[in-house]
Length: 376
Image 1: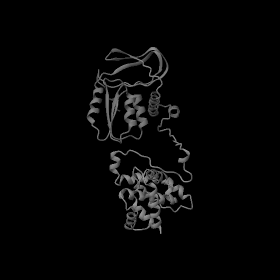
Image 2: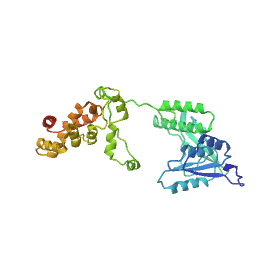
Image 3: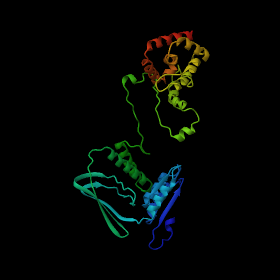
Image 4: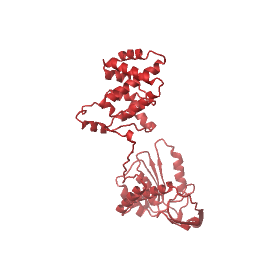
């Protein structure tokens, strides 16, 4: 490798690695670099989404260098200049961190120290006395430096132990690539993961939602939309309507598998009328599902519109029309066994909106009359 090239007297070997991909034998590469780098430091750049974080970070950590990840569209200049400023700095040797009037379990491997960078260490505190302090010492160009830092007790803060556990797991995951004690580190990672509920590549967690009695599903599984934030790149790639994308959450493969087991409704069509109706529900809970209603009732949209005009021929026609459509949609959803299995929360939301109307009783009465006329 590159560190086999002879180095001139009074010079250091610094290696710059730029990659936008990965290698098939990351573990062997990192172990070889850790054992044979001969004080050569690797300064690594990972370009784009395809760069292997394990390789980029692992090479830098194993040799005392620093790594940088450059995301797509990010300005590369700042990170390149910062990396080269580290490269020309004199190396900090014999770095030591000790505690006075306190006992800490410090990490075995200390990170490299560079001017302009922040040094962050997380350690387990066994005891803490009065006037405790941290002493950082080392050598730069043959001269010894000594820094004293006071220790401030922040009390009970659950976030710091969690950060410590994450740092421990991250360090042990790096050791999986370069250390022979693979089984030991795997067990320790799982131990810390379960203790602090931290997700990593060796652990997984099952989340259980506890609901009130009146919110629990009685017979059919209850499905609901989980709001998610889509990045701009994700929404740009999606060619359809975003409301279609969110409404599609009402139907899942789990639903299809569940109902297929029930012989009475195994012939259900997941692209039924209610799917189109659910897409039209707005944030308030009201529906604008006249086309879905026409399809369900097997009448022309024009005929449905004529019935709506006769039933809502009062002041505030637009609001009355929306209320009638919502009330009729709720009635049809509740009477459709196939639809109610996936729309219970949408029904509750619509009913709350109808309850907020001043003339809700009149709306409900008119909607029933309208529905009786349409079904007849």
